[in-house]
Image (cartoon, rainbow, N blue to C red; front, side):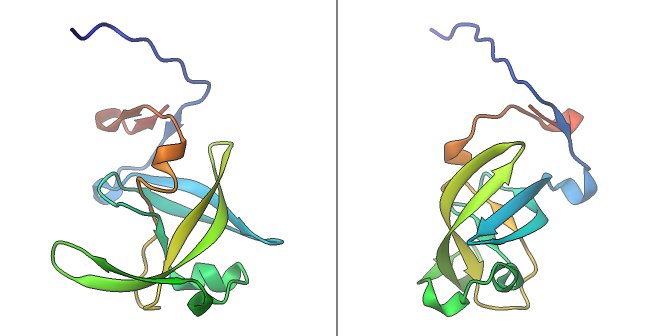
Length: 131
């Protein structure tokens, strides 16, 4: 039997609804370097994956990371895993994230493993709100 549950959140974030993407501001850190950017919240993405340029800005030598080939529904891509600090909405987590090997891929994604599995949030997509 499913009961009624009440959840309380201290903050509300209203995201832009451009192209049906849930884009949120984050801060990535590695060593003494930090990069502010927007990343797409993607519950269909298994991992967090970022542009290779972000690794460069963080002072990370891309190819020294864990080399991984990812398969998608219609293609595949190579990426390199590195541990970074992710800060979003005042919550800091440490995760292995991946950086695209191909510098032409311009996408930043927060996925299930490495971010969503470490936070608690409420999503009301038809109102563009994250709690």
